[in-house]
Image (cartoon, rainbow, N blue to C red):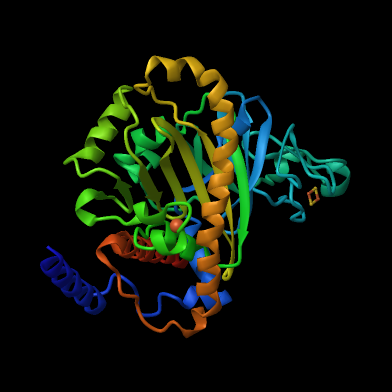
Amino acid sequence: MDGPAVGWQLARTMALREDSTFAPDWARTLIDPQAFAHEQRCLAYVWTFLGLTTDLAKDGDWFRTTLAMRSVFVQRFGTVLRGFENVCAHRFHPLRTEDNGNGPIVCGFHHWRYDADGSAIGIPKCQENFGTVSRALGARLNAIEIATCGTLVFGRFPAPVRRDSLEEFLGPGFPILSAMSRSRSSPRTLSMPVAANWRLNLHISLDDYHTVAVHPTTFGKSGYMRREDMSYVRFGLHSAFLNTSKPDAFADMAAACADGSFRATHYCIFQILPNLIVALLRSDGEFFHCYVQQSVPVAHDQSVQRIWVHPAPFPADHAWPIRWTRTLSDPIRNRLLPHYVRRVGREDNAVCERLQEVAHQIDRPPFLSAVEERIGWFEQAYRQLVAEGNDIVKNTATV
Ligand code: FES
Ligand SMILES: [Fe+2]
């Protein structure tokens, strides 16, 4: 068994090196601030996770975040969510200077007030200073497109070409993410700065080869994965790993999530381009948690991991004593899981930071094993998105 398997892997690895899914200069944006800035400019047009609707429950609630390095905010106006670049139309002061809040859009610099469409409708002393009424001035905020999947809020900068809806972008992942993201309680949140490029964070999340070496106490020997025991699935630009060899496990999960019959039975993780991870973690026996992580780019060599965890919103086949004690055991589980997530995250992030230290010495694609195959898929999809964004950048002056 070992002989043919090793031979198959070597042949495959050699093929990967010659016919690489990686660009030869794939590490350039890790060390070159200008290349990184251009990459981010191109990715501004891609549906990107921004936050959760649970933070926009009441009319007027808003949160501030970044979209491809640009400060943006999302706000609830009645039943609709709107997003804007966080820059005043007057003299560019940020409109939102906190991470979240509630209230109308009024700039702190000269008190210009905006409506739900981003139009400046209340400009102090407008007639006196600008010679006309507020609406006639035609000043407005730069709007971003907003769409939701379950409780997940996505945004992108508009482009003058027809592009896919969020549902089309996520494909069969849409019903899965929609179902997984629904939380009965407020998610626990974590934030971890990482002194490494955001793509290195994504790479390690797609790597099922490092577990024993990097997580010796958290996963131990059980971290060794055999390719034939798992399902790797590519859907559109995205990919998933389901810890089952059952044929059609992904399609079955999508169908069950869509009709509400899904039950959690195994670990699975979905990497959504460009920088979102959604996973179903086995937190204890038959208990599962949903895990949402975003690797937010901050600079070519800096990122921040934003993490949300909540009990999986799926029924489970628990024996009656477990069901009975659940009200007591759930809070303990909810408290322990973030500690575990932080510990595993620190172990992964330490590797990414060591890689970042030598990124200037990387001058070729890596060797990818059978259980690192999805990193190559990610790089292909990433390059496609940057190329599409580059075409938009060339043809538009809005971003
Ligand atoms: S910069 Fe916002 S009102 Fe002047
Ligand atoms: Fe890891």
